[in-house]
Length: 215
Picture 1 (cartoon, rainbow, N blue to C red):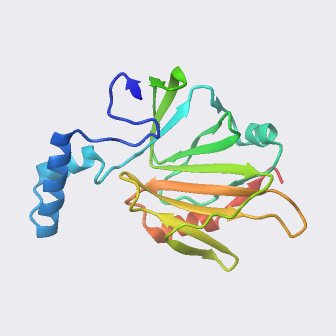
Picture 2: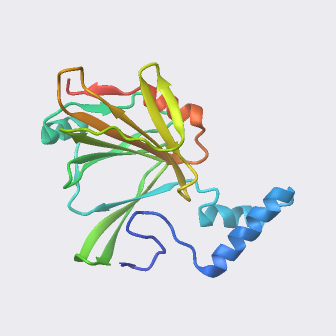
């Protein structure tokens, strides 16, 4: 699998490190533990993703850039959307993918978007590579099976989420489900991804603020 132009990003949107950068990354982490991390290595850690200020979203170029109202129309169901974001963060872009996922790109500054070429088993295709502070992904499923992962987090009295932080280099991800009232089918799988500088309490507060658009 290869993305051109070469930019050290995999198809999942995560950065990968060459051995030289990985060595420096380990050195920087060791110095940080000793409390002697120089400014130059702090800058290096930021560029390597250790203290990343953005997350990377990779979308197929067939993803449609839409408004929230258009996304509701395309999916045919209401869409859960957070109404609270920390500081000056807000929804900057909305996409609907071929898999009928809604992806919200959230940031407190202008979002960086590049077009790249991805080569994999399915052939050569164009992708969007987007840099932002946060990403919110909504997947509606007619037969929803609840997720169970490590990192249990109580979102509210009736909702449990799962915070994944150790498995991702540049971000944390909070997963949870919204189930319909008893007797109704369908449900939502939600994933809130954010740079690691966003604390757990803020992620839970964002999740708790979710309200439906189009209901």
